Image 1 (cartoon, rainbow, N blue to C red):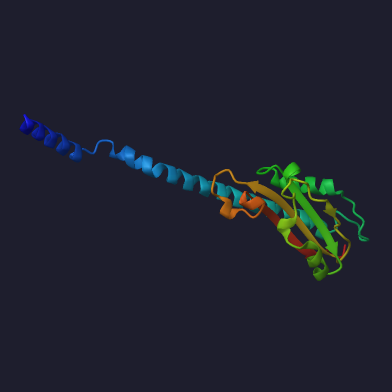
Image 2 (spheres, one colour):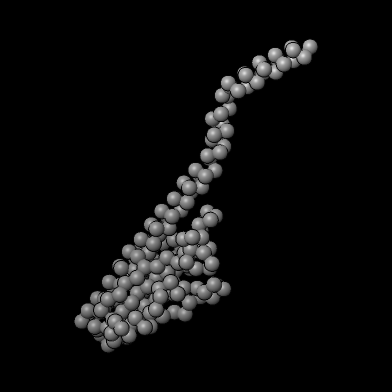
Length: 188
């Protein structure tokens, strides 16, 4: 009786060891989660970088209005309000991000680039603070031959977990994207 049991056990174990049924399902189960995580992380990073590119492009287009004197008179008085300037800039970027409520626009001018540098500081500091309080509106496009900085920021909150190594605000939970243009106004 024990001999038959041993023979049966050997036969079953031999069949079990040589069977490959279900191996693909097990391999897929082991590889699927990391694969889809990497794929999603690549997609989100690509979308984030594309959004930053669109934001930078809209800042360049809006800065052209300031540089050529279309938003201010030659004496420095503004002819276009800060809200209208932001609306004009948002018309180009709103296809990908919610510009009107989530984008902070900063326009400042100074007599020289060094004076502008001291007032501007780090572009990632422009935008809502960690508590969510909005950034104070700065809109002084300046007059002829003034040094001007135009900055627009947008806070990108990550969808995929463990992306905090890309974050630069709120403890890595978000990345502040920004577009920046620094120039001297033309003699308009």
